Image (cartoon, rainbow, N blue to C red; front, side, top):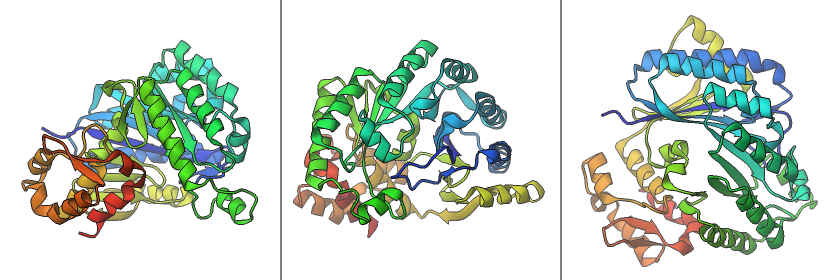
Length: 390
């Protein structure tokens, strides 16, 4: 049976750029949206036609950028193209990332009508001063209002994102944000540690001494507090940065990545991983649009890709182990590894596993599955690096 397939649709447009953002996003290019939508639809149609996939699509994810900038009729047009070119499950998870300030009753009603059934809400903080420094264009009150409107529209399956370890953030303000998020009663919560990326406005302000980074120990304490508080609040910690109210409410789309199942990425900067090949699309809107203009005349597989990277079996085994270590509840299962690759996990990674056990960074369950130790979650990259150099 074919593995289920996930589709990622990248919407690179933003009203303004957040101070910490280094994603493939662009402000001030709203006039390119109509042409971009048509290019997306063409990329979907060409790749579907040339790949000849029979895999059922069980998740579609609109990420960005700010997908909630896009009118519902344009999102509907993209979804119609997907339906025409792929076999989409009747119960497919269809997620839209949303800025809380973009929520209004008419828009949410239209989203539900066109098939969106999950929303990822970029709350980030409940502190107005922190939101301002982040460059967010919404207020705490707008997040509360967005949740009220989501519920009224019938979009009950929503997630909220929060950022911890942000300059000026204190343990008290973090606790307030976590508690405010819980009061919204979301189906899912994602917590992301701030990463100060090169070239961002945030990095510039820190370099100039206008902001001071949060101490790593305080950031770790923030994570520990959230982990305990969320567990007491009834949320299941299923992945390093993710909690859900029940297994059914885990992000199906993100689980696709962590389980190393096939996915296709469409749009500027989108990534894909299918048939032992990884793809990376053009990283600017202009280059992406130009590549798709050429594709109208010369139809080739992955027409918007700037990189097509063949994956060796060893690369796929490394990914399997590293990504499944992220899964708090299931870990790395040697039986699934053998089923997937036809060889014992110990035969490939014996020395790496032994070193990690000796360092007490991982542990073995009674059924043979391997897990990160609780103390290792925040230094998980040290575990992952053992498998990069194999």
